[in-house]
Image 1 (cartoon, rainbow, N blue to C red):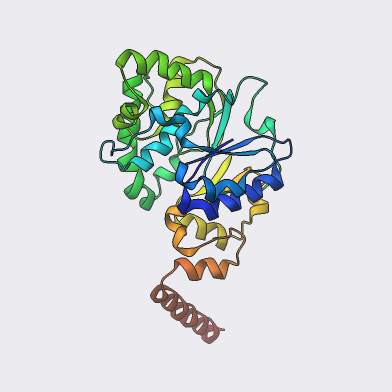
Image 2: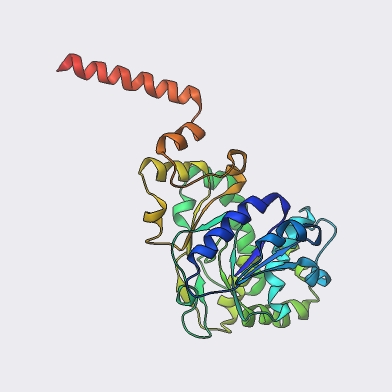
Length: 301
């Protein structure tokens, strides 16, 4: 596994590592890659099956200036994921986010179809496309860029099959992406991401185009709450991490919205989740309507 992290996410990384150590049934290795300035901060997370590395190992590929208006730190975390195979440490690696928590024991067979072929997570994400909030905030900006990647690699498909993250990366596929697509164009990893900053879609689209390894499809291995509404829905339905474990190896309460709330637990009381995400004004109106409806029913009775 590969975790790219940095100082602001160290608390999330500690939580991830704790769940990794607890659920790592077959002793799979985890590599944590951080900026050199953060090595001391993360060094305590190293241990059995866990190694903390400096991103300077990949310094020849990293950037110091914005790329297509995107800050260097964001671009570099994408570059690290795409270039990690160049260190020769592993032939396949599962990219995991700092805000993930493993919810059940996992092993080799969760990520690999056979001894050499990783699973590929490919979905259309139509259930996200139909959500008005997700469509407005993410889909309308994301889809044209994914189509741009599809066009650049020469993949003709009415579908957009990719994933948001948590993919098993194959060194064979990434080597082909570099040697057969990037090098003929004189492109670096930064040049690739300047076209569209979606590292997982570059991998997925090139794999679908090149077929350099068999495509053995799996649904997402990690349940991601992309926004408050999704988290609130699960909480009100009383779906716990034990329930989530029947379908996924890990869950993510996206830190992009949850960071301000601290360590958000998927198993907290529904009332706590409701209180966090629903404004006082809406709660007050809901209580008033409930009281009115209860009174009306009693009068009718």
